[in-house]
Image (cartoon, rainbow, N blue to C red; front, side, top):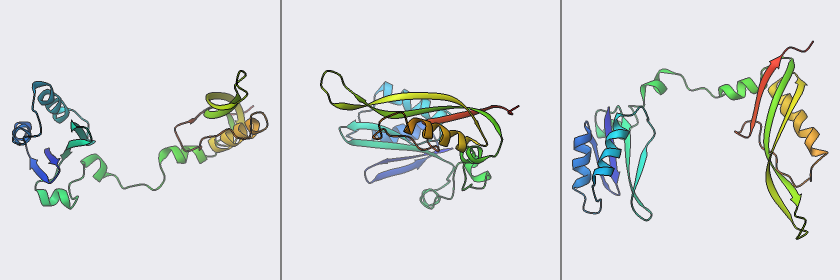
Length: 180
């Protein structure tokens, strides 16, 4: 595993953490200290593959990216993508979306976090409040569960309330079992 480091137009691809720290120490603006060094070593040894950004000054950062690229040109051409990603064929439909539209008639339990418009009693003004709504619904799919919950709420809350997408993190559901 190699490390790609960049600070403005200065960049390098190194095979070891010590070489990465040496590269960063050679840059005058970056103040290498034991905490920063320990954090870089921890990032390099972890299983995390997302890029890491370190603040140098306000709005000034350097980045470190783990890569399997052998050369800088391979990295630039994006030839060495993390092996777990490269072994799988990219899918256009995520598993969550497949589960959402999967037909399975029965009882569903849905949780919906939405922005509800409420009147503030003292001022007479309206404000948005985060609200969670949970319901058990008889439906054919997770999507129908979502639609039934939204239909129920539309008749009971202010029309300016904002409902999330069924594909987002603010809607969760689980299948409880077949309807009897």
